[in-house]
Image (tube, rainbow, N blue to C red; front, side, top):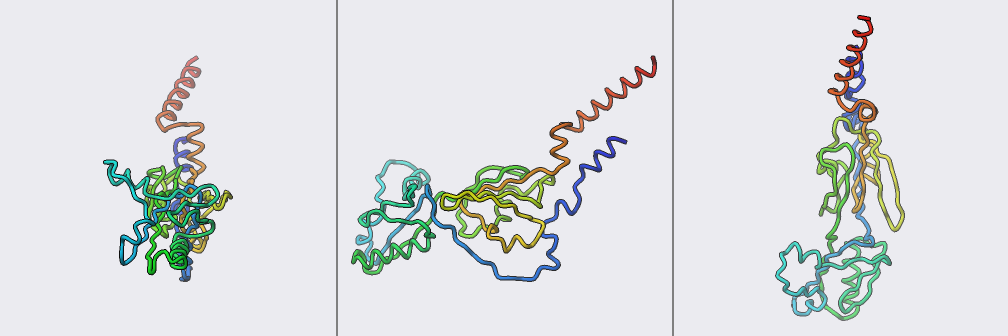
Length: 247
């Protein structure tokens, strides 16, 4: 009887595991895309080009031929944002990037090159090289994941981490985000369509997502590690009772 009660108590219901449970009543609404602003320790890949490439060459990184492969070179082919939100750009010098997205920085650099009579008609491309997020807890493949998408949703992020296990709590997903030196913690409900209008629906670099285990799983981990251990305990208890009854 005890085994039956325990197994029933630990079973997950549809309400526990289904996403977007209110989707039948959800009305469509436009998505608001919000690009992440540049943060300290970001590594920016910045390429300047022009009709005459030799004119743009001094404004680009000139990597020495070290014999390293392309992946190793990419680590050094970037501008590291310091704690004061600054990068040191060739010829233009120190540039403040605080509060800027990569697209805004492209426009800022383009204006600087034109207004300073450096390049007549430049094209500037800025990409974040070290964008990553971390997923911990009850997911298929916890860990830190690199990404290149400009707008990656939390649903896609969890998909990259192997999705939540059946023991993962979907109504209270913890997301930790650092923005402009401030750490923000929020709780998200994956069972509601309201998450699609949340400012945390789209992942930003360095986000941490934590999936808690449900109540029965936590209790089982704390008191009865496994069904095998439970059966062993039950067998031991029955043996003691039988021994006492015989006496």
